[in-house]
Image (spheres, rainbow, N blue to C red):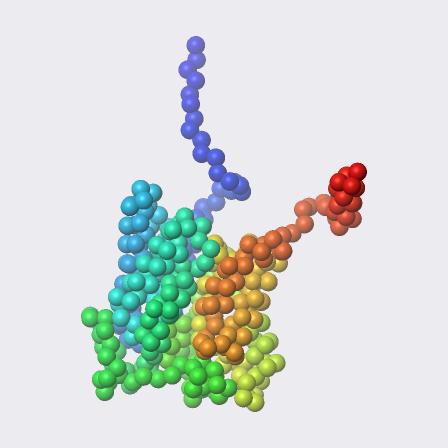
Length: 353
């Protein structure tokens, strides 16, 4: 009698596709795309920017490992998703933020936003932006204390201790282009458009250089990691609104350019809004999502209490993805509007009968 071999099969949800591309490869490409912005952050804010980013990555990896070990779950550190969260969270924080505050943000991003909802693929909002929103709520002053980049700031200040004292003569604080002193109040910033585009302005570690973020975003599109629909719809919406409705009687084109290159628009459009887990999967949904992010960003910048609206606009739209995907769901192949109408009429007739 022939021996029957038992096969242990794991049945997963569709689609069943065999591909050499996995989460680790995708996340590695994202990290590569973020390198240019990291380089500019170190150039303008000193080695502390690099140290803060490394600490953030290590903290995220530790919290993910620790939580999954505590819950007796399989380890997922190899997929590099925690590393991406660590880099992005450091990128949206001020260069002067104490390390211990950043680590608290890492804990909230990994444990509360990501792991408590089931881990990668189950979270309903972007973990890095969730961590930033939490830090803004708990430590608003530290999160919005900016230093003048380059000459005028002590690049080595607080490198080891993580604390930067603003009372020192070598530390020069300055407003960002989007602050209430400038664009949030309808005035153009003192920095030239070239400085804003390159990143030689005050701001968060990794969001100041629109040039490097744009290069990184194009790299992701070229590699097929992200699709262009969300960033194009996002940036185009901000461009159209700020061109049509400039504040303070400023030149339309100049005002639009400053709005596009200032703040975290490029970082949000290419690296945050395109997150696979928290963005729509349908073509129409991606466009709707990008437009919604653009509308909310401009509304918050113009009328909100915060000068920057990228983070909160993406978080709000994250909560609407389920509805956007439902609205943007494509028709089944071969099913026409007439067939749908006939099916509805038949169903209604059956209920009445």
